[in-house]
Length: 321
Image (cartoon, rainbow, N blue to C red; front, side, top):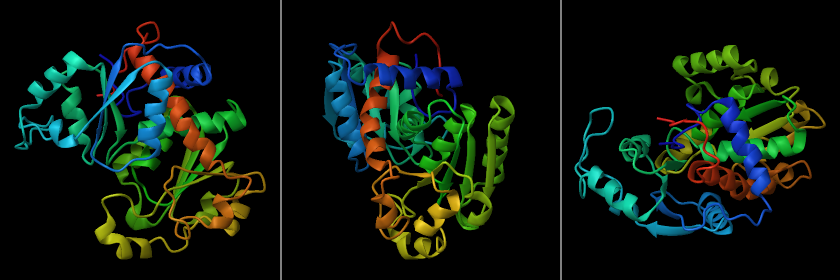
């Protein structure tokens, strides 16, 4: 059984295969998902992930079924780490029922353990639409956009801001594919030693490079892409003022883009908080690829769901557990 819970257990070859398949299917009339039902379970708000992926599945001939998260999540069984949560019914019953009607579950949750809990029964593929630790669907769309601009050239990609789920999946995928990845952000929202060691291991295994520092002037120059995300993510609204104050000096504005270089492009996963992590001048510039990225949420979803659900495509076991 194959899942897409994170980028972690996917090989560089499979990641590139999914990107290539996405481009192959972008404007294709093929219907590899004909007769397939995908259950959408969204605990958090969504625009690009929900609408872009639903459009992709429809275009591939599949069907989407939406259900309230409380009817699927929070089962009264143990999380994989041994802790428990008392919920509506046992997760094994929930998953066994869904597997009789649907061919995959696409879930956006707060806690990554909910994704792991659904996947542990290995009944149908579980695809992570975002959680607190990972955003694999975003990373795939990002690198589709990057390769559309630079081909397979191993350019430099710098994330500016919070060491969050989007940044982790971006860095992880870039390092697996051998890119020059970099990160700059405030020390209180930086990577911990375990994460930094993991990124260094990926460099050793796959031949890319990684640099990280709180000083933007040391990291940004020479970047081909500057990537930003909201400083305050969904679920952190109660800490809005205190967290925002820590990111003084990390706004992506024209001065920071000039520091990167005259040919640098701008990326943002959206939604953007204009005037906070990015200025209007940057996000609306000709070098901004944010809407191309957004459209590629649809295109890369075609590759993901076709790879996982079309038996003729899924040639490698990459459970992502």
